Amino acid sequence: MTISSELPIVECVARARIPTTTGGPDIFLHLYKNNKDDKEHLAVVFGEDIRSKSLFKTRKNDTQQDRMIRGAYVGKLYPGRESADVDDKQKLQLQFDSETGALVYDANTTWNPENNTLVRIHSECYTGENVWSARCDCGEQFDRAGHLMAIDREPETNIIGGNGHGVIVYLRQEGRGIGLAEKLKAYNLQDLGADTVQANLLLKHPADARDFSIGKSILIDLNIKNARLLTNNPDKIEQANYPPLLNCVERVPMIPINWLNSNNGIKSKEIDGYLRTKMEKMGHLLSKPLNLHTAETVNTLI
Ligand SMILES: Nc1nc2c(ncn2[C@@H]2O[C@H](COP(=O)(O)OP(=O)(O)OP(=O)(O)O)[C@@H](O)[C@H]2O)c(=O)[nH]1
Ligand SMILES: [Zn+2]
Image (tube, rainbow, N blue to C red; front, side, top):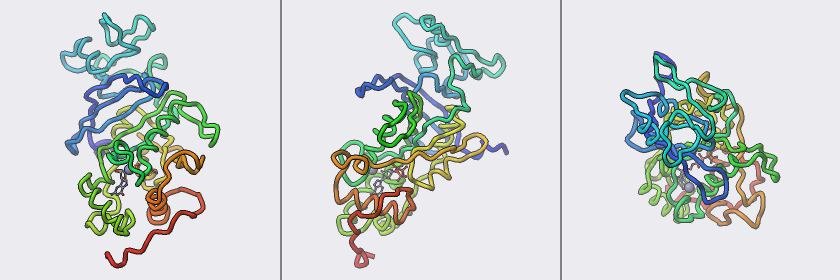
């Protein structure tokens, strides 16, 4: 068995350029299918030149039109363009292995797989990303990851950004893998006094039911070998390592915005409790002195 056969097989189905409302660079949204679950996992890619091996590989009866429509093109699409592999305006041309059909690395068109690349492996959070929940920092972390990938350096923290390159893998594992319905029940238990770990356990779920293997396969498919991983979660750092195909070469902290500037970011009793539980029970690498509110006891619930 080869090392890679232990990981789920992923295939990028489509990629499209997304001009953004933030004034930052265009991003490229990649949608993946896999052989492990039936969810549509995503990769938000900063940098036109970070290329999915499975998307770009020449397929049977592939036409240039097929390739442009699925997003396997170089440079930028424009009305009337006929070739996916050549962008005449920018003088870019992709090369393929004549036997395997695989994209051949070329420094003019493709991000060097050896580059240290800013990466975030994010898990879906409907509440934090869509309905302005102040129970967690997922929405803020998603925005912050994208911001850091767009900039060259963040003055407040001295964090070196991606300067237009980076990947946010977006995994559909809502509620640390327990799903939205169970997460909503966990929220009610939290209002009854449980912390986030206790609530999961009371519902007979593990504290964290997530699996990052599909995320690893997606990063390997995007030909990222050396990840500067944006996280405070030690478990994720361990899980993102898959040498020699994928190495976590650096951990870049996700500092809550409110800790950097008390006028910004999320302020709530719930977020204090959420962060405290991550630090005290899940070993998160956050170093602010624990002056957060103390979680109430839930012995009566357990
Ligand atoms: N079960 C449960 N899941 C939650 C709760 N709050 C947030 N989540 C989920 O937790 C996950 C957030 O994980 P990440 O943003 O990857 O954060 P992390 O693993 O804690 O670590 P970082 O990389 O440091 O941010 C998402 O799947 C959320 O839906 C909660 O109170 N209960
Ligand atoms: Zn969340």
